[in-house]
Length: 341
Ligand code: NAD
Ligand code: WQD
Image 1: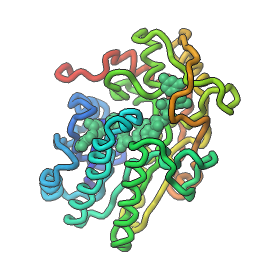
Image 2: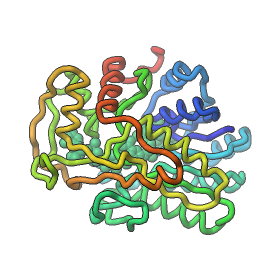
Image 3: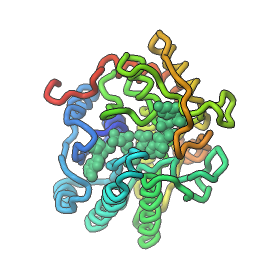
Image 4: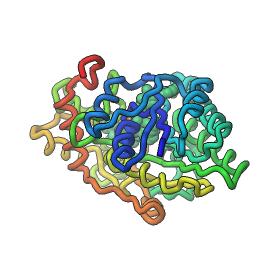
């Protein structure tokens, strides 16, 4: 069964392609290499023994999408392609709405023309905004979001909900709200490869652990949490990837299917640093700094719906996430390097 994977060379997309192949599916990738390298394809092939077909191009290119749907019998689409840096989205909001919202519309339009009605969308816990109590439940009202990135996910969800309602017996659309994906494939062949200064906690810690940066800035130690640092629901990227394979059960089950993909519990910044120290075997210097604008004290998922309806739950611990992140980091100190595969 062919599954079109947009953004399939990216961090979560590449891990999902591996899981898809292992589950017997055939991923076909479209990626414009904006935040990834072609070398990822070789790595997927090294892990699985199968090299997915790759179209290098943009999800906003309806002509290219039409070619892909005309030349391949696609059963479902998993839509990862997008921009994801929360801070950057405040500076260049139009780019975020263009890629994330308009790109998602282009994709759905071409799917509709080709009568492909199964879609899985990468949404984010950020849609729950600032006002909801934790743990987050899928039925909570979304909104009150602080970044254009978050609004782009909120808007895309709404566009897809309206589309599903317009042809209720056709579309099966799954909105997957990811919490904080970290870690890497245990082989150390694929992982997260941030360009420039990492925005997220674990990639930053890993660069301190390997000596590229002097210390971790801990953004605030006066939150209403047990140790005062921010608490998040970290999820191993392989567990997250398996969540997509589990969601493929929803193929041809018309409706809007919304799931939190998280572990159901949280860890503090200091706990993540401690787990990483265990994984790398040496202390990780850190300094307490002021709070980061837009952060909230704590949130994690109520992950019971995905468990009940998809039979999916996370299996890997924070220690596993740190171990696999470190393994990826030491095997690829400079990330992916094209042409040297
Ligand atoms: P990523 O940047 O590693 O992967 C995105 C991929 O999409 C990259 O390979 C990039 O080159 C590609 N891409 C970007 N714009 C494109 C375009 N216009 N056309 C075609 N390809 C394009 O990001 P990721 O961490 O793998 O995230 C995947 C998805 O999950 C994104 O939609 C992101 O918003 C969402 N998400 C990520 C996180 C996270 O913390 N990583 C959390 C929640 C949601
Ligand atoms: C985690 C914790 C920080 C970096 C973001 C997006 C969210 C989703 C996942 C896409 C917080 C603290 C961080 C550092 C620190 N992405 N921190 N020092 O902010 O929970 O979520 O990524 O959808 O939408 O908002 O993740 O990893 O940036 O931060 O102390 O150098 O670590 O304050 O408490 P966040 P994060």
